[in-house]
Structures are given as C-alpha cells and as structure tokens.
Length: 332
Ligand code: TYM
Image 1 (cartoon, rainbow, N blue to C red):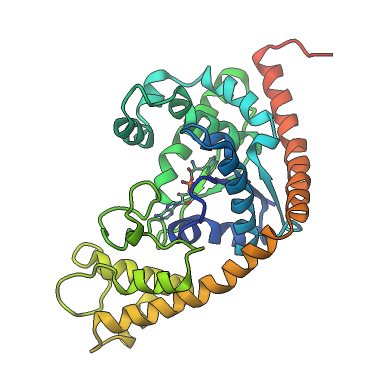
Image 2: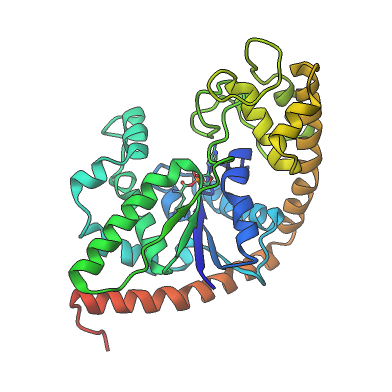
C-alpha cells in the first residue's frame, strides 16, 4: 500500500470547515486505500506562545475531533507528534542541510513574522517548515493530503529530501502533495478574497465545527454574497457564491452544476438557508461524537499511545538509517 502522512495543529480549539474540507475529509477517505499516518502537531504549535493547560486540552480535543470526523485507529495510525521524539531529532539533521535563504522564502513564515515583528518571532517559527520536512520524510510518505496553503511546505520537503538523497545516497521517499482542486482553499464567509483561517478570519467569517448549530446557521445566513442575483459558480466574478456552492457540493455530494440548476430563478437567500441546514445537520453529530471521545479520556489516551508506538517503529528505523548516512557513530 502506498503511504500517506499529514498533520494538523491543535491550537485552534475547534477545527473549521476549511480544515475539514481541505484536509481531514481526504484523510478519512485515504485510510481505506493507503497506509496512513496522521498526527496532531503539538511541536509545531509552540512556535507561537501557548498556555500549557490549554495546549494539553486542545491536543486531546484535536485528536477527539479527528476520530469524530471518521479516522479509525484500526485503519490508520493516529498519534501526537511530541510522543515520537524522532521528529525533533530528524529536524535537526534537516536544519543542517536546508539553506537559510531557502527557508527565508517560505511565505507562511514571511506573513506570520511580518505580523508579529522580529522581536516576537521565534527561531522555532522560522524552522517550522524544516520540522515539517522531518515529519514527512520520517515515514517515507508517498502522498501528503493538505490544503493549498501547505503546497510550498511540501515543495521544500521534496527539494531537501532530494538534496539529502543526492549527497548521502537514496534514503528518503520524495513525497507528492495531494490537494483536491475543488476544496483546496475554502474562503472566509465575510471576505471571500482570503482563506478561512483561525488567525486571519473574523469570528463571523469562520465556520467552526464545534460552534453551536444556531451560531453556524447565523454565520452562513449572513455570509457575504456578490452583486447580481444569479446562483452560478464563477470564482472571479462571484467569489462569495462560489465558496458557498463549493461547501454545499462537498458536504452533500451534489455536483455544482446540479446545484446551479436547482437554484435557477431562486435568490441567494434560498441558497444560504438551505446550506445553513446542510451544515447544521453535519455539525450536530460531529459535535456529539467529539464529546463522547472527550468524556472518555482514558480510551482517547490509549488510542494515542498505541498510535505513537506504531509511528515510532517506523520513525526509529528512518532516523537510524539517516544517522548512519550522515556519519554518526552508532550509540551501542
Ligand atoms: P493547519 O493546522 O494550519 O491546517 C490543517 C490542514 O487544513 C488545511 N486548511 C485548509 N484547507 C482548505 N481551505 C482552508 N481555508 C484551509 N485552512 C486550513 C491545511 O492546508 C492543512 O492541510 N503545517 C501544517 C501542519 C503540519 C503538516 C505536517 C501537514 C505539520 N506537519 C506534515 C502535512 C504534513 C499546518 O499548519 O496545518
């Protein structure tokens, strides 16, 4: 079976529709056909300041949401990044073969550090993509299912992996991004020019999966739509409506052209009312399942412990091979 690996940050608390449609839904599908490794990236989370108690709670909450979304510990390996120390260990080696200029060109780093200012930006935020390189290469992943915003991080993983293989001999599998065109970028409901994101969106622009269904309905009904009244998919002229159609289509499985057909002669209001119901019907059982996992922390922690053991077995082999290639003397 080909292998997939991906990760999600725990720090947002609730996942949003962009996380789900852009990434997590593909994770669930791929566990049926691939050897799948998925993790909650708590090491990445501390690149910006975190309250310890909140980080601990949000890490378990992230795992609970992944299980509620349909990840099955019988079909995939689900773990917490800090439980597998090889991530940090391989990241050091990767730090030493990544160029400073190369890392400086990462757009997510440039955006985030520009917002924070140099004195508040940690060195960890700078090397964030290098840790991600280690995450991916450790598991010999063939595919990395992510949203569009992660494409550059997969590209640098390919570059650095190839550089290592060229310098030290074939060691790592060079991964490909797995990005579904339709849902690669879910947009902010209030500002369709930007992606839906915990850090950039206003609360009204973001559909959190753990919001009260009532709040969800309200947000969708007050989504910004475009001039005109026709419901057609056109990302340039009608970015707001197109985003709603994408969400509608991907949650119901109804192709966009069929939706356009169904709404001929109806207004934006009708589309938003129906979509609000679709989303509310989807989030209600998701919330309930998430709560069930949270109510049983012993089971949740046991799932994560088992996942970490499976992940470590793979990661330890890769790290040992890498250390050998680099020229480190074996420890025993
Ligand atoms: P994170 O936690 O920001 O996001 C998790 C996943 O959700 C996707 N996503 C979106 N997709 C479509 N539309 C949106 N509006 C949207 N917002 C977020 C992201 O693309 C991502 O796939 N650096 C990663 C975590 C990571 C990782 C890895 C991923 C760490 N190590 C190794 C893959 C492989 C991140 O911050 O994702």
